[in-house]
Length: 474
Length: 164
Image (cartoon, rainbow over all chains, first blue to last red; front, side, top):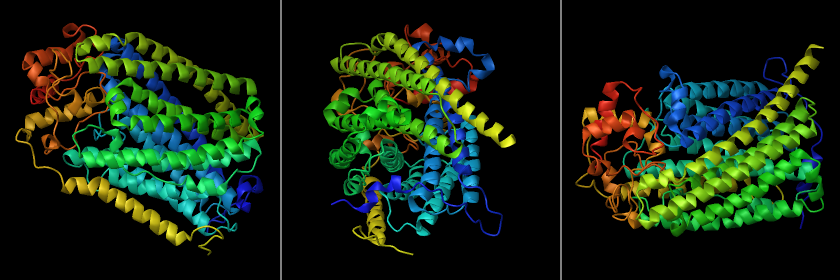
């Protein structure tokens, strides 16, 4: 039986009035969300460029000879890699999520944002966090734990920012006028609050070193990494997708009940560390949960395909819808791949190889950044009245997805070859490295194609920004 | 303020359930392995100040993004680095008892380093290799670290020699 909530994104067309802030003058709504979007695109460019440099390093370390001597320390592979990862995850994607949460929660609850002022501070401090990351990581300030490299003061700031975002989401929901909660709101509430706990625990924010001792350090590290993906990027991303799919396709959500089923969680991260020197029972628990994740993934897949019924033809002339459909498809592919990778036999083959890098780009570029592009186009259209040139939009889409598929197929092939070569036990390691050079070259070229696409994207966002700025001064 | 929604579970139950789930997850995933952790291996090393300094250089320069420090059971005594099977024996949890953070790593653009000092016990080899990897290992994609101060390279070499 369908509940009336199912059409929620269509029902919420009115813009809530500006937030009456405590004691001060009322602030114009949605400005924090707008700043979050422009900031996210800026950090996206910075970290994307770094990714390109990393790909060049892997093809030939001779790129060092083009870097002036005093810069070789800060611009070395090992210092730039965490910057690429952290700024893309916590700058580009997370700041877009913040924009979506701050913009969509008021719409879905027919209630002004709890505090626009708090939201603006959140945005300002988030940019400060990213500035800190961009400066500190190349200078060698790192805690040395993957995805948890940021130093102690930045860890504290990041935790506070998640809490500030959660406060705004929860405050808005608790004061809401619309009694029924659309599924996306559940996702936003859960993601923003639980990630603060996971981040605090995973980064050990009460300890300056940020590291646990011995085997448990790796276990907690991957508990955190897995839940950073699961609790924050997946839960938040599903909330965004479950808003955008009905909103852009013009169809009501197929089943709200099914969407609630998708609201499930996997908490152990040990399937990232199979055959590692950790407890076997933890690996088995983790594998079991990874298989169980097929339930929420299937629920989302069915909802996605059924909601899109009768609207598939629209992806050919609506770029944001094309991005959301792409993101959802790539997400489902990620889930299938993820389950396969969580089996010991397959993990033994591909773990430590370039396959894993392909997997992470599949989900972060193909799925979550795809939602991100849709969000940027959609929200800037709503907030700034931006009009985008479909030709540029399609060029961006084509270059991004074309480059991405070349990139993914190259890395997956390279990964399988690496894994097979190592498994023979008959090939010196260095020979396996040399054999990868053509793949690293193709990967670099694919990265260049994607980079050109992102410059087109940034140009469009710049035009939207300029258009709004000139409209304000006129 | 309404806390229930028709046809939906009560907010309190959902929150309580989620919190319980999260706390159980944290305890089972992280607390339990800690309590059940085996004692330190006989070979587990407590670092001298010089070794610890070298280890910090290893972390700072991001060596761990391309080099792992764990040998998985099926590849133990089988993996081929310089000679067949020289990847070394399977890593045990107790080997890492005194390390914070551990440097297990997730990617092998370069070889596993758990037992690198068995393959290269020579300090001068490490120093020369760090300064110009391609001169020592033809076709290596490791960046050079000649820009680091000598003291940092010496400490790093000292640390690498503990990996045996």
